[in-house]
Image (cartoon, rainbow, N blue to C red):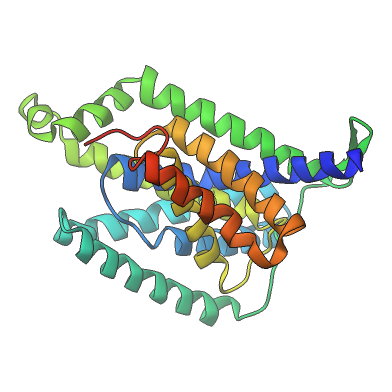
Length: 286
C-alpha cells in the first residue's frame, strides 16, 4: 500500500510539473500581459504535433521539442501582431477571438495529422524505470519533474534578476512611463508573449510522451491551466507553481479515489479558495 501511495504521489508531482510548464506560459500572457488567450491549449496541442513530427523524422527528441517551441513562438507572433493588437483592452473580444483561433488550429491539426492518437517518442536514455524509495518509477516522468523545476528557476531568475524582467514588470504597472523612457514596450510585450507561447509548445512536446496527443487534449489542458492560474493568482509565478502542485495532486487523488468526481475534487477546493481569496492564493489587485 505504501509503495502504491508513493507511486501515486509521484504521478501527481510529475503531472504538476507538466501543468506548470504549460500554465507558466499562460501566466505570462494572461497574468502579466492581461491578454485572455484561450488559444493557449490549441498552441499546446499544435506544438505537440509539431514535436512529434520532427522527432519522428529525425529520431531526436530534443530537436523535436526545440522545433515545437520555435514554431509555436512564431505562431504567437502572428496571433499577437496580426490579431490581438486590434482587440487590446477588450477582454470579451479577446475571448471570442482566441476561441475562434483555437477552433481554426484544431481543424488544421485534424487536416494535417488526422484524428488518431499519437505519442511523442521518448529518448533512449529516459526509457524504462528507476528505483525510487523501493518503487520502480518511469525515468521519463522524473525527467519531466526535473524539467518543470528548471523552468521555474529560469523564469524566476528572468523576471526578478534581469533587465527584461524589470521592464516587463514596469511595463505592466505603467506602460506609458516606460515608453517615455525611450523603451519600445510593445517589443517587450511581444517577446513575453512569444515566451509564453513557446512554453505551451514545450509542454505539448513533453506532455505528448506520456499524456499522448489527440484532438481534444487542448481543451483538457486549457481547463487545468485556467484552474492553476486562478488558484495560484493571476500574474504570480510562485502562485502558478503552487497551483500546479495542488491541481496535479488533487487530479491524481480524484482519479484514484473518486473517479466519478475527479473534476469536483479539483474545482470544489478551487471554489472554496476563491470564496476566501478572490484573487487567488498569491494574487494581488491590479
